[in-house]
Length: 181
Length: 181
Image (cartoon, rainbow over all chains, first blue to last red; front, side, top):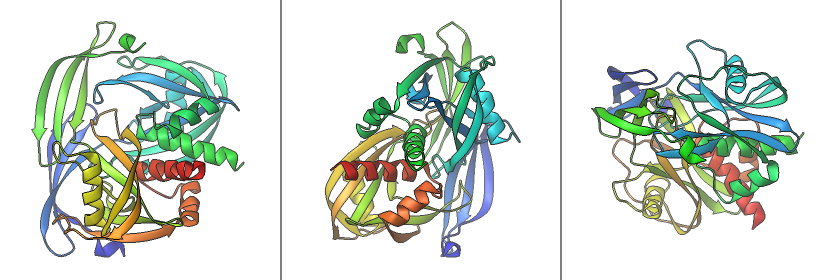
């Protein structure tokens, strides 16, 4: 089935290369021979974690997002360094962002965030058995730590009041997985 | 609380302007006075729909994603035209992608997809009372329509087998909302 959909990249131009992102414009040949272009943001990938402080509480972070023009309430997350193991990155980011090291990390899912134009793949973990241990922040990252109960979270989910896709999907799936344990 | 996190944009350079995306590099002043840069993908926004064929079945689409390098199974979605009403866009995209017009559209949530670097906001709807009515496709869009039952979907969700964040979050939230009806 997939072969009937496959697009062949016949030329690829890097039009921007920055600190975080690279932007590529690909010329592609569609299955029926037609040509088109695709604008592709090349991203190193990222991790996000649902950190359980105890059976009833999850640790979230609020931070300013220039792209959104406002502060958002999100689960902790971070960008992979080149070649970095997602689980190692998840552990490091939790120590940096919320000051806890998880003794138990369970992969929940891996997903593209905006596959229409971004190569970013996100690896999502459930983080449990948290022990206090802090690593210094990235110098340009400012965060507020927010602890919410599952019933507060459920309320925000049903009312559609999170504004970040990874936070929605990770909290909903974590809830489902924990109910099935 | 938010003011303690606010970053002030003090300069903004457009470094690329394409068919779909614009890329901006912002210089920002952090709350403590430090300067940093933010790479921002400017995107017109999008819609995504959970179309219920009947109480037991959802209509999905499989399409090639150049940014992901493979075909992905997703809920139907589309990019907003400038100034377009999200509900009108949702209706148009369903007629184009799956050949149905929904007589009932319920907003589920609106969310940023990748707020670390993209301004894209996604408006997600539950689409019901589908009547057959087809509009011609975008010329460079090739899709396969896939109908799955909720029990098949639940299986894929729990095993983490979707590879697209909007599909994960929209299906999980639709499930939750439908259970509460």
